[in-house]
Image (cartoon, rainbow, N blue to C red; front, side, top):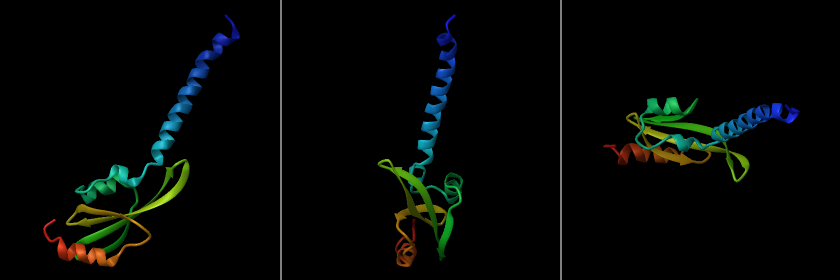
Length: 114
């Protein structure tokens, strides 16, 4: 048996390992909004989005912030999203640098039956 015949299985193992690593690492850079949806409960959100920060709570409306590193066009950037909950349900998702308090008040006043 030639030496090449002995190394083929090792090459296959290395190729499978590298491919798996690439697929897994790409998944780690997905946007946080890929796993969230309007109407999800706060409990589901906390399980799906690890370590969100409570930014504001006002009369039944809670706003959580999550910053995550994602890859866009081959460049890694940080995305910040704000998740608005009313009565335990996700009702709004925004991007930006900070929570707009006026939006929180409007959600409380204008959307009583969400």
